[in-house]
Length: 445
Image (spheres, one colour):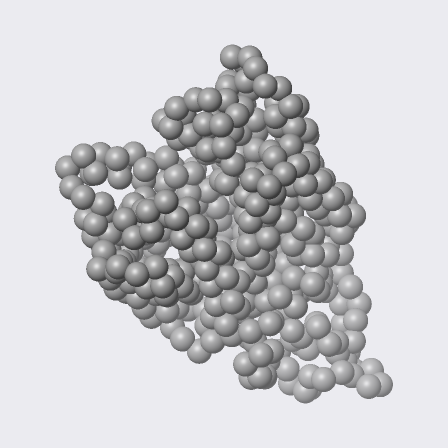
């Protein structure tokens, strides 16, 4: 898997991703402590609102970035986003009002919503070979999982020497290092879309329309919802299960989250070779269909009040959640790359970023509010039902046969349009056939 790091451009971009993730992890720890200093016992409410603002920024900003991305150099866009994030992180230690935290969090996450989809759309151009790109996706999954383990540990070590405000400087350093690494990378020239300019609204919604145009991307929409249901249960209720349901110490919360990350990393390490022999559809659908089974096991565990065996079983369940989610998430980039033409990739990745976080915007509060108001059993039942329904719908939406050429007619393109190179003139337009592409040319053939 590490052989892909021989590519200098990808090596620099991957390093940029890693240092930015570490900086973000340090900021997460520091932000919790800052919220406690400002709001005291209401810190949980502040962080919950900040999380909602984060998701709202992702959902709203990513499509807008997709609309203007083709007008801006990708390097400039990513570096500008890193610099904005660095300035915001530098400002956080000086705030003393809750509303200031909310404003800065929105700016920070808006910049992340600009950086991440652009970064994801660059990687397929840097690594055009399918095998290399698959390895890059697995490395990216590993980076996210390792960050969730490494950043809290690093924060704990640093906090034994300095106050939490200094952690924000680590965040600033991470974003500045990311910007420097992006500058040092030689990015390939992006392919431009062979179509008219269109309105800003049309461009902002182009990625979403791509998702609704292709069956496999429509399936990806509900796959995102199933993953969001599982990850919300782990993220929101791990502390409730460990401290309240099992009566264990604070340190065991980190172990539970580590089990989730460990399951995800194990799958990420295995997938590159597996995907050489097995289709993306097979892996992703088996992953999503595993989630309801894991929820069923969690429901059985939740119904039991005593027994020392419950702790190792919870760790196994959390690891299974991580493995199943990784089976769905890791091949996602391959699916988008195959479904959208190169000129539409930024819009497609922006849509995936926005729509997937829209699912989390739904499931995060559901996991927290339902668990608090009606009990963990109700939260498990509701989120498990969402995962089951989403898995069944994904199987139905995603046809089992591979892509086949589709004969169709274009009525709105001029005779010298590049897309019509192999087309035949017919009354009312031009007719040809090819494997379906989820782009604007085929939204109105």
